[in-house]
Image 1 (cartoon, rainbow, N blue to C red):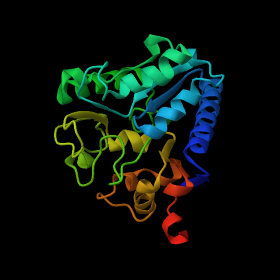
Image 2: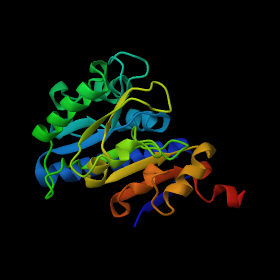
Image 3: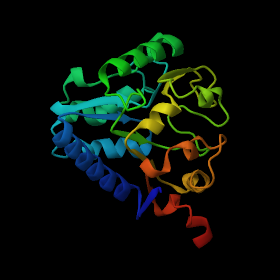
Length: 241
């Protein structure tokens, strides 16, 4: 069952999320010696990463992956890698060899192919031989998309063995992207989805309803999912208002 946590405001969500992520990484590293986490872009994750950089995490044991990336260079303003670099990687002095960047500048297909290969070689595997991430940090779009998996897109039907996919027709610019597959997100040991602001309330309500290809976030495995929202993004906010 999905765990839903509501905080007073966006800052409280970021504070709680940073602490929860740090705790989860510490536990996994203590159990296995290494942890694998995937990051997403977005306003709410950005503040979370800034606060996470201040947490007492031993980053030498953590591998950082990405849930998706735009097909731009790593220094582009739209790059999720650049966001993570400025908010977390540099501040926490994370070893570069532990950071696995999606190479958006290679284009959707080649970038996805290389990332799938890297995942298969360096991430642990589940019992089903799927790349296993310990934690994936996700945002959610007003349309219910996660990573770069959009409503009704063909990428949702990529199958249980797909690791990473090229996107050519994103409804949000830029149209070309790279994304982890739904299968990888569903195989993750845990997903933490963050949402703040009234514009996300309908999306959160829809994702907690019946699974639907029209709301990709609703296809995540509920028993491995935590959702953290502020009061404005709470699925009950409009009814309470």
